[in-house]
Each structure stands twice: as structure tokens, then as C-alpha cells.
Image (cartoon, rainbow, N blue to C red; front, side, top):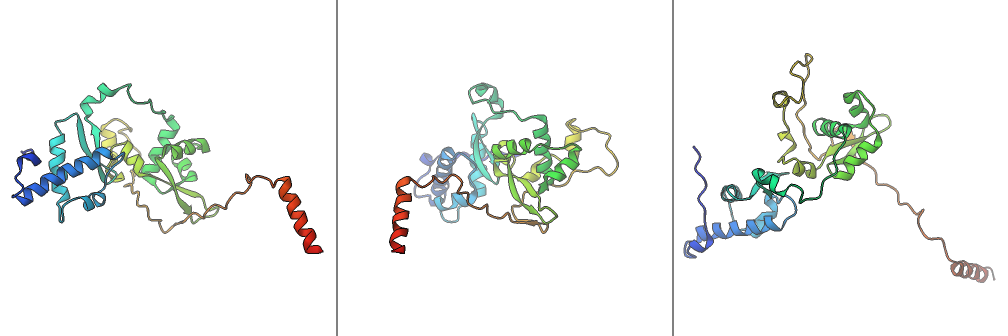
Length: 248
């Protein structure tokens, strides 16, 4: 049986006890950083603000244990830590936050395919789904910030490859994309048919930002000058005058 981490209060620690005092001060520092951050805070972002040699894992374990009994919990998401409303209090805040735009069934299917099969092209998504995928569906996922353009496949036509983003992990409470449920979990939850064809499997997802061997970087888009304002009449007259002087 795991015992809860002891609660350390800075005001109960004597400054003479340097280690305990530093630990308590670091806890308060992390708490402040999490409170003011709009997204997950990674360990590397905490280090500059903590005592030299601070044990971040021990600090986060103690702080998370302390917050576990509160209305706001500390959770790990997208490789960092963040504050979130305790799950049992979600109903209290229902209706207070803006209603998020709901994804269509097609968008949910495409998002799931991208998450598990990334990097994946539009043609590969359609092959997995068995139906065509509209550009509007992919545009919605790109606008949501959960999907990004990774690169281009080294194949005829150089199709764009898609992958998920850290915002996807935050939205679904995942620390890493490998935390997505596997085949047994999906079957147990009744999300897929228990009787599956022989050889059916779900790939181990990976959102490694590095391009694969069959991918290449996307080229920079050329600048568009089509919206540049046309030259004014005065500028035309000045140009004509300059050309006249050059010809004189």
C-alpha cells in the first residue's frame, strides 16, 4: 500500500534546515509556474527556477499527492505537467466553459487514423477508411490545432503527410501518443468488434517530430504579392519623370 507523500509547508520549515527549506520553496515555485501557465510545463522549463540539483520527479510526486485531494489536480500531459479540474467535479463546471465545436463522425475517424498511423497521407487515410476523405475534414482538424502537416512522402506526387500535435495530447489527457488505448483496451471498451479478421492489429503510434526515411521536408511557400496595393498616380508620374530625365 502506497502512503501519500508527506505535505511540506514552507512556513513549518526552519531556514536552518537547508534541504527541507529548499524543497518546500521549490514546491511553491512549481505551483506558481503551473498556475500561471496556459499549457503543460516541461521539466526543462522548471529547472532554471529551482534550487541547484533539485529532484523534479520527487517534487512533482509530492505536489501531485498534495493536490490529489483538492478540486484541482496536477496531471502529466504532452511531456509536462499542468493543472486540471478534478474529474469528479467536471459536472460543476458544465455549461460554464464555451461549448467546443463537435467533430463530425468522419473527422473523428480521420483523427483516430492519423493518431495511430502517423505519418500518414490523405490517400492512405482513404485506403484505411474505405471511403474518400474531403479536404474540408482535414482542414477542420488542422484548424483545431490537433493535427499538423509533417512533410511530404517520397513518392510520386509528393503527397503531404499528417501527424498529431502536443495540443492533441493535452486535449485528450495523454502524456505521450503511446498512451492511446491498444487493441485489447479498445475491444474491452466495446469500441471495436470482438470478432476481428485474422491478422488484424493496431500499430504502436509514434509522434516523433523527426522525419522518417520516406519523408522529406516541406518546401517554403513562395511569397504572394498579389495583394500588394497598385502604384498611385503620383508614383507613376514620378517614374515617368525619372525615365524622361534618364533619356535626356
